[in-house]
Length: 252
Image 1: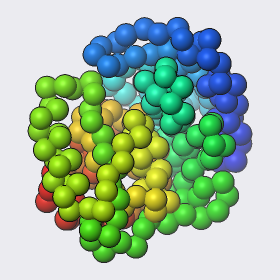
Image 2: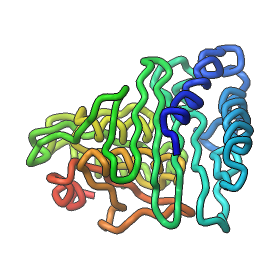
Image 3: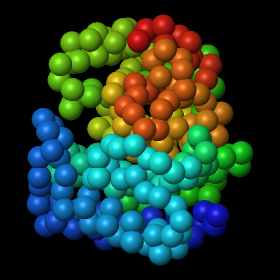
């Protein structure tokens, strides 16, 4: 598959993201769980374009909701990861597209339209940022690095347990960061800006592309128990440079 052609397609979503009037058209799916007209516009655009180019590949998108996929190959799309950020013009939102093939992610693209940054990877070919190879950090311990965290805002009943995890991580690391976009957090792990990231109860479109980026950049991604992630269910995601992974899991 021509990944450069796919990158150019994903970059065509920039005009949608910059439409502040459409970003103000908001529907509530659940507590702190929103969809704007921008989310819908991007999903419809990419669904149409991908179907035209690859009619035999199925499609799993956030705005369709999580459901069983009876296909060996399908796209996994988050049209806007960081919708609450977009609503408030807090410019940390990305478009995330992954390709699932027979049990694994084989291609991932994360596009940050505000910075014109494109993070991408193909299975076995490394990870890249705007054409340059990227690699996870060299930190040997949590005390040598920053960690990104997610607050699982849709699952407020988990808040106390999750903030206890965050406290434990904060105590052992240099500092913590919270962007409001799991895909962006995973991209930052892949390029070594942070040494790790964790968030419970993520859905496949939140982590599919980012997981491949981290792995191809030399890192590791598992659930909180150290097991592989599932692509048709929610997963609690822990990502790291690999060297600090066991230490991170021990605090979760």
